[in-house]
Image (cartoon, rainbow, N blue to C red; front, side, top):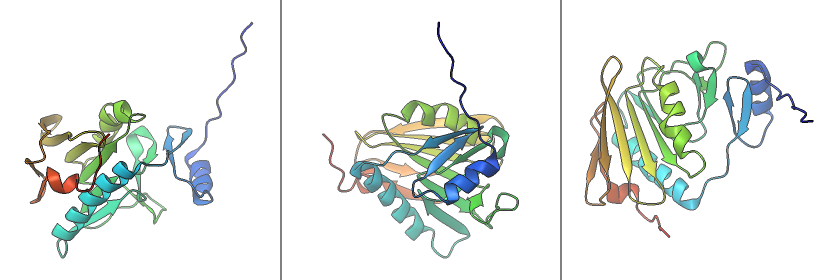
Length: 191
């Protein structure tokens, strides 16, 4: 006889209280609390390089750039998550009653890990697309030179481009910004 164990489901309020008191970061997906794994040096370098270039290029403009620890709320999917890099245009819109959770990203970048690659490309991207302000998604591989770019061209229409050469330049579609892949992968050591 097989005994099925019931998985505990949490409310958003329970998650937020738990997350506030936790030294580690967790994502929340419709009642489930999931520990975010520690990142590799390559992951941190890639995210940091991309963030630093964006932050510097967008200074004194109506954009704010965030890296790793800024929480995002996706209400239609009931998800709290921490994108690797996020750009917001104009004023920050916060989740009602919160001062620490953004709801209006323009651009999101995720650095792919083996354990999250499929989720980042499929379910997470689908969740991000429910955010009205969301216009561009960048997926950066940390194990090899490879970047996927998705940008919105019309309602429910996205264009795809990919890059796999350090001599190429990634040009964002939703803002005036470009960066050489060599700069994104600066100091990254592949196996």
